[in-house]
Length: 301
Image 1 (cartoon, rainbow, N blue to C red):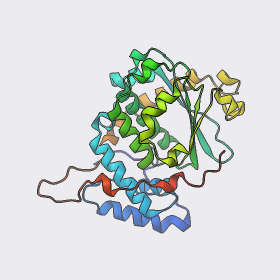
Image 2: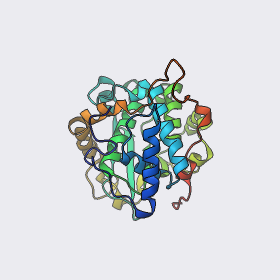
Image 3: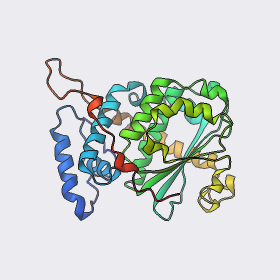
Image 4: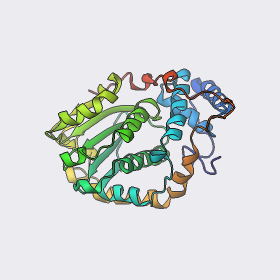
């Protein structure tokens, strides 16, 4: 049982739901409470998953079930979520992960990720995936329910040595989580400053990517200023906002102070073990289909 408010740390009471979807949120929440192996999902969870799945109740049920299963079956990513842990700190000290301050006119939040230390020995892939998921969970809490996210991965400084450190198990978990269970609307994923060995990267990940997600990917050798415009960017790229390093330091500090206990508490949001006597529903990944509607209707070119 969680002791803190999830998925929004500072919103223990249910957020206001658009009137036309209020009954669907109630239906999903009541259904989640009736699942014997589910964690204590809140009504805000039901709202968040329904919004991510474009208000389709069946898709939201599948996404919630997949979320609970992945969290239970991937302890290397979703257990022991201490932001001050050595592996997480190593990742946060070797990367910049920032939510940019200005949303797009459509209300999309821009997230920017890059290496700050280009030494491949500083990257533990499983810890990097774990840290990335922790950052994103906290950002969802900060943002509440938003129209969508545009993600910018900057490959500047990425070397073949980083590719050699990728572990297939955590990569497979990450790709399944992002496509099947991450409760947000992904609108676009830009890979900027694309490395010359991008084809080798894609050969590694393409078998794990479905067409819906492939359709969101855009590669460019240019920087982010050529994609979203300088008005949305830090001073590093000619924009009006603080440097990336400054924003990362501020957001890292927020994780370490305001979100440390909350992230550790979130480790309980996972499917309970199946009863030895056969009680409870079977955990069959084959029976779960992804909430593909979350990738439909993209209006960004």
